[in-house]
Length: 193
Image 1 (tube, rainbow, N blue to C red):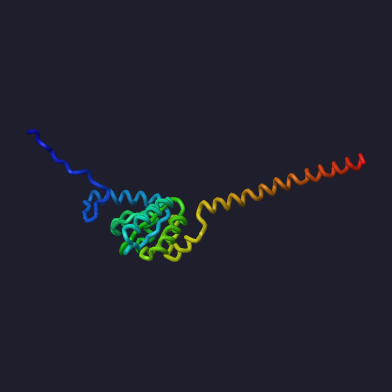
Image 2: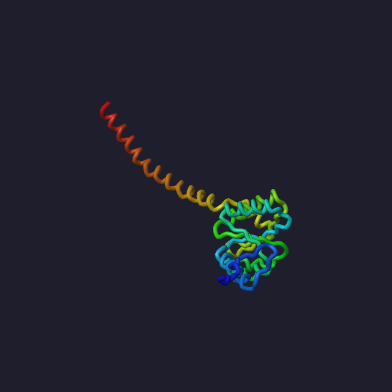
């Protein structure tokens, strides 16, 4: 009979619940998280103790829809991954059950998702955050951030402000020509009449 050779399955980046990670898997996860944290200047820490599985699933969907990411990892691994990234500024908040929500795009959209979700699910509590890689926010600061207009709204406002003077300028430049035409027509009618 031919010999059978058994091989172990390929390693996973994140183990199943209850499984322990070996040292290599931990380092791979730390490296992956470090890259993600480095490229995400906006990050918020949340406590999620007591959230049901369906609630967490809904929360993750909302995070993805806003262009953000949400990860839950052991604090010791998250702290190692945060070294040299904006998250290092709030390392003292990595205690208890901590989830990390982060984005490279719009910090206001991220804050709005968190604060809106926390209204319906009081088990989710915002701990702290980092915006633009340097500004540290407490829970009240994150709540205040969520009330600000988002990036798309600010862009629309700016565009409106830029277009208004141009429209007024065109109207103003057209006015002397229109007035001159009226004066000429009135003068012509006076000569004919």
